[in-house]
Image (cartoon, rainbow, N blue to C red):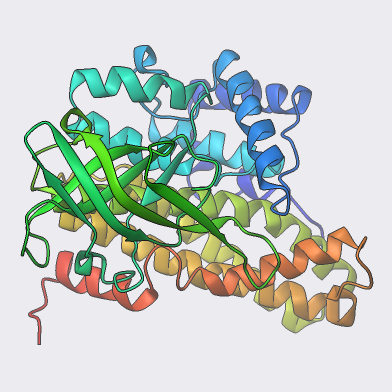
Length: 394
């Protein structure tokens, strides 16, 4: 008889967890059972963000803050194993991973590596407490996957930066308190040279945020215009004209976080697909389910490897993260294709109140988007060729 088991308990390496890690899983599972995560409605972004950030505050108050950083900076210095446990348990109860991911998974490691003590003390604790929302301001209309083709400028007078230009595809920018931004600080520069990385107050005069309505009806992304926006030089992270180093660190952290977070989400969804397979599946479907489980197990180990990487060279970190993102995209398509095949026509929504089918449809469409968002698969392969394989450019 085909049965469904908890996927987390069977993956390679789980049997070797020590007593501390098993105890932590039990503790956070109890907390999440007693303090359910709010349902995130992408069609009501403002209220969903408020509710989820409030839940982040309760999570932090209970001793489970999301950022991995010293306690005095609002997080916890957790091991990779404990990070993975928390990701798995949060995914199992449907907690939304993408809320404030810029603050949690990008800004935090960047400031720990390159930020001043004053910057760390100002911006990190509110992230851990769920008090301030961040967005990323990297991509431009002519510089998406080719990030270093950016044209937005940030020219300094020695005291402030004056920012002019446009960014696009910025998640939650309409509601964010701060933005992590890249712009050209050296007139006439090109490529990776002459770029600055800095923090922008999203309520500054001269910023115009325009939401982008997507094909599914939600508007979680936005384009952002800057017209002589003033930013203090104290907001610059790292060397003023060496934002490329910061950018590579951020991208590596983003994709590493995506690997762990997406694995946990897919593993949670695996249970539902396994139940469908038990009810409706043929032998061919069960073979596909076994391949999906294998791919999840590999991605779990890959997430551990990325988070445990000892190299500090940004290009190698980015290449490791690129490999994880490639596998995340493939996993997502495998998962949703099998689910759609098992459900058949019943996967289609039959009315505006058919929320289960609508969620399934959104997951199916989103699975295709993973090959584009955060850098196309082609760009990830380039990063692997450059950072790991050291292949010559043709």
